[in-house]
Image (cartoon, rainbow, N blue to C red; front, side):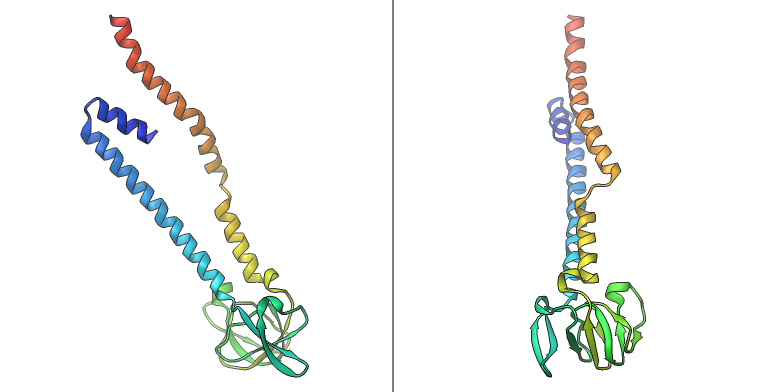
Length: 189
């Protein structure tokens, strides 16, 4: 519709109006691209919250393995400054945990045995042993990422209505414009 309007305005000699339409349309496209880039960057940042590796206690030894290979029920060791690799329950140790990337809490939360911790949260100061309660693909963080991706992919009811409306409106307006331009000269002649 915008392209048709620009071509029509140029065709009848309204060059300033055609240029204005082109500029406004370009600005709208740039703003849409900017918003989409910000959404993609936010999603990328969310994905980077969870560490790729976890230090697991196996047979009394600490073993570093990819987070995807850690099973539910295994014990993960989290040292000060480390990110918690998977959701779980603290079974040993005490620490303040910064959960702000996940929950939005502005102050670190003290965690002791029996408390839940989330993948992507940062262990601030103490040593923690965490019993894993969910796999990497089923963590709170991965569910948040899935919901954000789903929200970006889905169109709201308003967007769906506008798409349906424009499917009828655009061709109708183009036909009416052509008829308005063609019929008066035929009637007058």
